[in-house]
Image 1 (cartoon, rainbow, N blue to C red):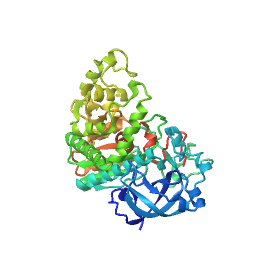
Image 2 (tube, rainbow, N blue to C red):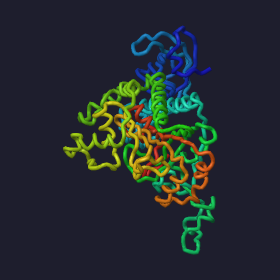
Image 3 (cartoon, rainbow, N blue to C red):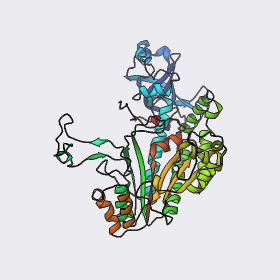
Image 4 (spheres, rainbow, N blue to C red):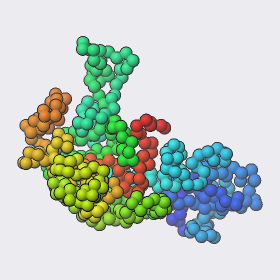
Length: 479
């Protein structure tokens, strides 16, 4: 029976026979095959008796080829590995033409991340992306493990929706109408009553509103699924399709919500620290080498694993938005006009540069900002007694800025109706959401965490397009 390399490398070299299958990473001196099957960053060395092997077979053992190796596991004669396989037989399962391989990123040399993105269907077979995707898988497992352990129920909220949870309007329309000849109503507008769902629908930007309704019956739930934003943003921190983790909890105020978010983040980071050391070490060393060619100001603040420990070992500092604005207004970068977006007065919408200053320079630990101005936050956030701030919170991380956004939800029907009216949000569109405030309303809270931003932080990668298998962004939907 075939064994994976991650398990073989942990075995005692007793000379026992085994079968291993994988892809050739390198083949040196017609003798040493570096074999990888994706189960680990580490290769298994397979030593061929080339003098007693068919030369035609040796010619087919090329970089990228899929092979099966039968041999004995023995103590390695060379450095760099504890065990190796003395090859008895090799079978080529899938050839890889060396001339064609030279045109691809499978060629064993350092490729730019941009080049790897162009061949996203092959990039998972490189060390960097194998490491990133294994860590992504571990983080995903840890998300479910944490919430299940804490008694949350996993809920699948709709991907097709008729509501805009964020109120931003940047949504992808879903329609089955013939766009070349759509039906029109009496006013000459497209008649969506004739569409598949009988109304205008879009891809969801959040499962929060539906999640709230389920928290009102199950107590505490979480969603973990794809979300979509039609924001025409080409930055290294934005995707058009990404995954969101959104817990919603009944009988939970903002302080409890902040406790939950901090505990959750520390749990999933500890999980990859416990289970992904080989991949983290590789990515850390890669980052160190990459930083050597960058100006001092653009280099990482600390090595990858030290950065993860920094989050685990520090309590998150809780600071009101009002206090943060005062700190930023009086900061050296602001006074010396070093900020791209100067902070002049209370009410400013904080940018990544401000968030990172608070975390990296001022407090030197992760920061939770709370009680934001109502006019820069969503309608569903609970209005404070001052009438101008809401019970919102954002968690800020080093190197990345905001990683979590959440709030205590507005549980008072009349206040929610007033806020919706002020923002021209029709009650008839969200009648079902308002019903949760009519029948047994209670204090409740939740937050959203963009999964790719978590993966970005945990892997040390610098572009969000490199932590999802096939990134979707403006002008690009390849693969």
